[in-house]
Image (cartoon, rainbow, N blue to C red; front, side, top):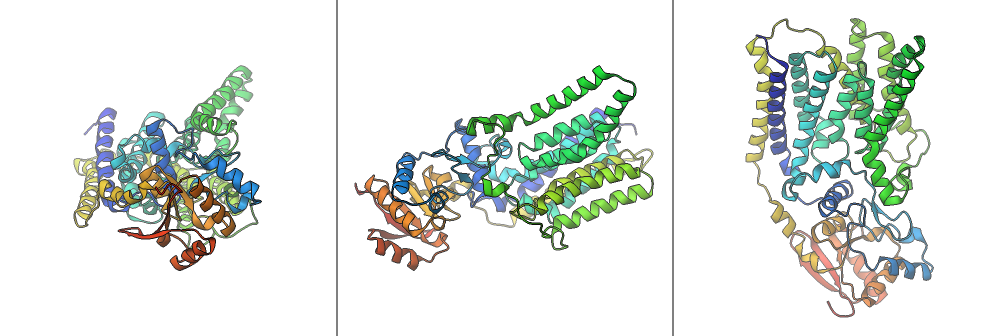
Length: 502
C-alpha cells in the first residue's frame, strides 16, 4: 500500500498528540504544586515575566534593595555575607543592585505559550511533542529517511523515554534539558546530509542551555567535506558564501540569547549565570560511573553505532566523528567545578539522531502492511491510555488550590526561607530571601532596616536548615519583636511587622 509523504506527516501529527496527551496525564501529579527550589522557580517565574513583558527587568518589586545594600556596606558587611541572601534561588546580582534571572530564555519562552494554570503540567507533553515531531519533520525534509521506519523508531524511543531513567526524570521536573531533546536528535539525524541544518538545531538549543554550543566543535568535522569540495574545484567565492551562510545561521539561531543577554547585562557575550556556576576545578571521574544513568545510555548508543560500523552501515571515519561528541562533552564537564548527573546529556541525543538516521534510511520492510502501519498507533495509544489510567487513580490538586496554600504570605513584603521563598515570590509577587545564605550580622542589619522602613517580613521556620528554636533564639538575641503563626501547608511562621504595624 503506497502512502504519500503528506499522509505520513498527518499520521505523525496524530501520533505526537497522542504521545503528548499520555505523557501530560502520566506526569501531571509531579507538576501540580507551585514551583519550588531553583530550576522550577527560575524558569516558571521568567515565564510570568514574559507574560508581563518585563523579562529584561527585575521580575519582582524590590524598592528597598538599593538602600539595604548601601546600609550593609556602610556597616562593614562584606558582599559574600549578604549578596545571596537578598534574592531567591535562580537569581543573582551581577553588578550594582540589578537582580537578574540566571537562566537562558528558551524554556521559559516556550512555557509562556501556555496559560499559567496549565503551564507547569504542560511541560512533559510539550517535551514529547517536540521530541517526536521535530526529528520526524527534519528527516523527512532534509534526508531520504523512510517514513514508516522513522515512525517506528521514534515511537519506540518515546515509549522508552516515558518509562525509563534518566529520561523520565526530566519529565517529572521543569528543566532546560528536555525541550532540547528533539532539536538535538534532529541535529544528529541531519548532520551527515545537511550540517547547516544541524548547526541551526544545536545553536537554537543553546537558547535553552548555552553549554550545548560545545557540540559545535565535533560538528565542524561534518563541514570539512563540503569545504574541501570548494577548495578542490577552486570555487573560492562559493566557499566564502558557504562560510558566511554558516555564520549567519549561527547568529540567527543564537539571536534570542544574544538579545536577552545584551538587554540584561549590556553585553551579549557575558553569561547570565553567576561566576561560580561556570567555574572550572580539578579533573573528576564523577561522570564515568555505571551508577550514572547518562553514562550508561552513552555506552549503549556508542555500542549501537559500533554495530552499524560492523555491518558497514557507517564508515570508521564517521564512527570516530560520532565518538567525538561524547568525548568533547565529557572532557569539558570532567573539569567543571559544579557536577550534576545530567550535564553531559546533549551528546547522547545527537548520537541517537545519527543512529535513527542510519536505520530509517534502511529498508526494513519492502512494502509496509496495514498491521505494521498500525504499530506506531498502537504504541501511542498504549502510552496515552497508560497516562490517563495513572491520572485517574490518583487524587489531584488544582492550580487554584496549590496557589491558595501561599496566599497567607501575600500580605508580607519579604519572605525568608529556603526552597519556598521563591515559591512565595511566584505566588505573591513579593520578595523571597534565603535565610541560610547570610551571616547573623547581615540578617540583623536587614531585619532592622526593613522594620525601620515599614516593610513586613515572614520567616518560614519549617523551610530552613536551621531549626525553629535556633531562629527564635537569634531573633530574641537581636531584640527583634515577632509573632508566631501557623499556616496550613507552610508550618510555623515568624512574623515581623514594620514600624507602622502593617
